[in-house]
Length: 242
Image (cartoon, rainbow, N blue to C red; front, side, top):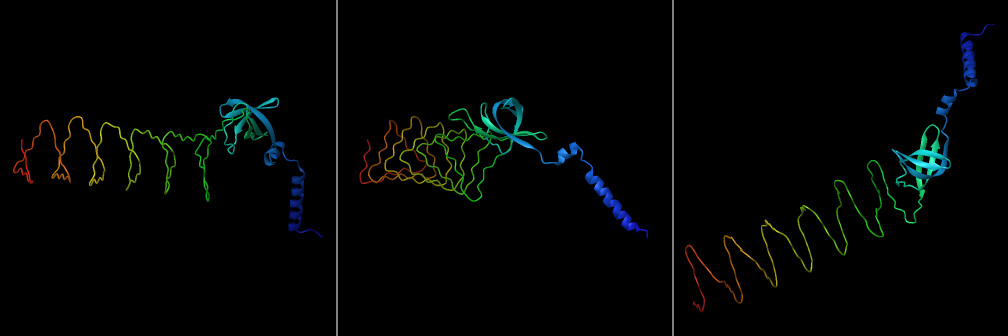
């Protein structure tokens, strides 16, 4: 009794699959498909060549690329951890130690860097000095800004402020400048004592000028001139001229 065409086709397919499974895979293909073998070793930084770090690992001088997770900038003499792979090259994973007792540590990246806390606070604490240096702009955006310090110094070629109110409680205010220009709708001052010295000329131009003294009004000058286009009036209990 002869077998059906479908049964013969099934047996042929099974035989072909067994033959393919028994044949060995090409070594290059097997190496590409297999998980890469990675060796980790300690090393010491000896320098930098273009974008690669030169790491002395025993008798070998390894050219390693700094991994993205290694944010600390290595320095000569630092002990580092290096991952080596035959097909993927060598990567510098971490800076472990430095020969200096108090080494300087720099977080260095090629692109943008963002430090984010989604539900907590971010604090920058230093035992001595905190410096912020930018090649272009330093922007601070917050609903409220507070600064507590014993002394503050600001050097700016141009300073602009746009806001609604300024409240200042100070003991002493000193201004040194060459020119002061103010454009204000209303000025109200309440002063206990006011002393002003003008070396040359003071000019006041007003539509109306009212001066009122509760006790004595004293106007003295080497030459005193008063002119009016229509009326000059003196009114008092006693008027002494000359």
